[in-house]
Image (cartoon, rainbow over all chains, first blue to last red; front, side):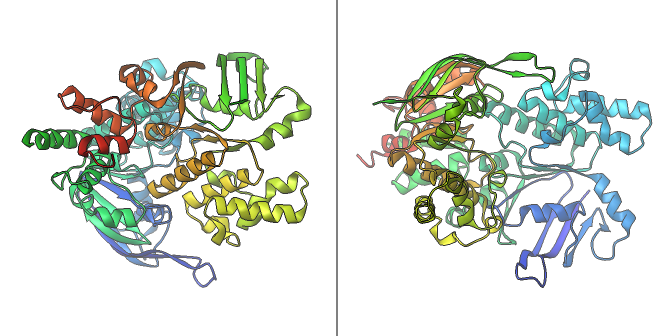
Length: 286
Length: 280
């Protein structure tokens, strides 16, 4: 599975006084098995971009090619539907979309809509719950509404995974969680990515999360791709990121401040772990 | 200092469809909040933080025990509006709190409901928008603003009520980094202006900016103290599904490796000082 996005443009309310160019010539590629992070301030075009990736919005111009099939422009309706089945979308606060009486029924909802045989649905529900770190036998009969915040979110993500998507898009999957649930959910997403080998796309305001989890990071600003590269490459552009209203991961942020006060530290520090090692080295030299 | 909020033996239980009480969301909690202070409330998801906040501004009423706000009991319905005017609330999602199509109308909504003279409302709205640095946007449509700007409009709406206290329930959870910074700075400014602040948050570095932290767990107060007291006990904080701020984490690790870091660090500025000797 690969995704190629070329020169994507999208205008909201064209011809009206509120016309706004939400995407202005965005191009990038996601390689098979890659994990891509998308960051950018509110209104930078992240969500508009995501909505194009699963065919919810159509671009004014430009193309999206998923595994060799073009899904934009004059694409066949079947091709767009095919892509929608392959691209799983975990929206913000997905637990608000839980609605069934039991966890099992809720997770089975998607596969059942695919009109799969009953045996296959059962297998998928069991597998999806296992993937999100829940015990099928323990939890299948529970009401999703009686679970903790972190567990609800897991069940909601299981509902998407049970569709066996080949691309998993997650919009702010850790927002509103306590620190432990936050870490647990992020580790779980990393596990799912490792086990399935699928493309993962993570949209986040949390610079630590994209650093920890993503191979590549795409930075959006005013509808354009302004930076793209590995976390190390992207977060070395400190001044640019701060000017765009973004931030650095904790380790890079503190290192940046220490450097300003004259401490001699290398440029490529991202995490607290790396910063700890470098400070110890710097202090050892004193 | 006088006490603005006095909570005594508060128990609150949500009820199910048949009116039966479920387990206690707030389980026998007592504490007071000094006028003009800055309190952060932290705790894992479902620990009772938001339920506590809603009990303070009379959106929820005690199952037993009492909540006094500015001397009024929340159970006394004659004073519900006095309480809500004195203790404003700002929620997580700004989109759910904005009611008007023009920024200044939105901010005026609360004072208009109090039946205040139009000239006075005009002055209050202008002041409130200046307080949150949004004066230039008063004629704009809220939906064209960024998340941080919208949240500042929601805060201006609370400020225009001239409250003595504002309760913020995870006000930065949905914001981008610059939006978070904007909102946190405004909260600190309001505190400096003498408003009592209660900040519920999952961001430990935000809680570290308060004067006092209450840690909730399972409907009870598990810890209560200064940020330094709270974050000193890293093990206990982690056992409660929480964490310490990044600066505290790093200082702790360096101390363990034999670097002289002095007493516990909760503030990033302190960390930078201790490591570089700057600022002192």
